[in-house]
Amino acid sequence: MKKLVYLLMILVAMSMLIIAAPPEKVEQTVIKLILFDGSQWGETFSPKEYANFYMLAGTDNIIIPTKTKVYYWPITQEYMADYYDQNEELEGTLEVYHGNKLIKKVEKEDYSFAYPQGYYGGRPELRGGEAAKEAAVTYQKEVEAYYGRVMAYQEAMDEYRIALDKFWENPEAYKGRETEIPKEPSQPDYPVFYATEAQRGYILNLEPGTYTIQIEGQPESKRTVSVFNPRRAGPGFEIRPEQKWTMPLNSNEIKETVYISGKQTMYLTPYNGLEVNMYKYSKLQKLPSVSSGRGGEMVYFWMQLDYINDAKLQVLKDNQLIDEVDLKKWYVQQTADAALGYEIIEFNPVELGERPPSFEGYKVDLDGTGRYSFRLVDAEGKVITESERLVRSIGSQSRFFAFLLPLIPILVGILIWVWRSSLSASEKGTDKTSTPQAV
Image (tube, rainbow, N blue to C red):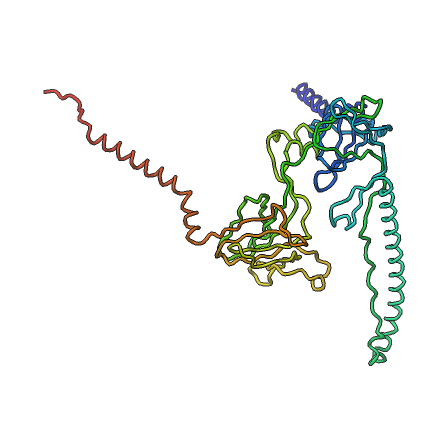
């Protein structure tokens, strides 16, 4: 028995050593990929095991051929690169072939990502060449100016505290001189503009098609690039009914109808959308994963991108314009009673202080009668393509039939079962056969 216990302990220890063993790393040339997905840039890489990668057509992307260590991680079923162990970027001219024809040569250049509206304030911008260095310098100046404002603020606070102490020594002396009462200085504004440090890479922008790229004279860097267009593009809407603002519905296509129940208030938040192939889009975001995109080769879905905030919403009833609504910020606050309800109010930074708005959207009030639709228009009043949606109101009678319709197959099934049961009972009651009896 003791021998069996010792054997089990040895087996457990050996299994733990096997699990803890580091994966085998192999040196190879990979391609670092910083790819645009329609909204922002994400990073992945192309090892030799995944020598075909995907890009959105007509967008700037960063290509960086690099020699590093690659290993397979079985837990997540993906290849990974250890740039900390080895990270040697390849130099030279990037050649781009379409078939056997060399169509362009790309030189390495500086690049950076700029955020004109702040890091969390909008879509970043990829800047190359001198513009990349200028963006980094601009951000540095913004930071230096901010620290200058911080120093000035601290000095002003010191002066304010001294003046406030003097005020409290004899407040009565300031009667009739209220303008001389010391006021606390305002805190300095944070920098808005942000930019990453300038780095170097190959900026690649291609039309739809299949290409081959490599660093000139370095065949180990050779890769195939599949460049694709989205199948469709157009504005979509997040639709928030007032009663269920935390569960917005999405409408991505012009042919979709929005259904409401009687009189209703809803909030519409428009965004740019792309309909893309699931497999290609998944590989664009995470190429060296065995499971990414699996089963999605023939599947398309809508990708929600950045919000549209430079348009107005027109509401029509029976094809007549009845309202034009501006995009506003809204705040959801809990009601004070015990019912744990809430109300949606227009966001007011003066009243709400540092609390952020809950969401942005167009407020639309519908009385539930007639035929409604809504659409977006630009600053010039032109209707934005594919932005129109039809709205149908389901009245009490329609709701009754909508509830009754799914029950019809069940009722039909019950009637058939009753009918068959009655036939079976009838056949048993009219059976003329009987067992022979002895005379």
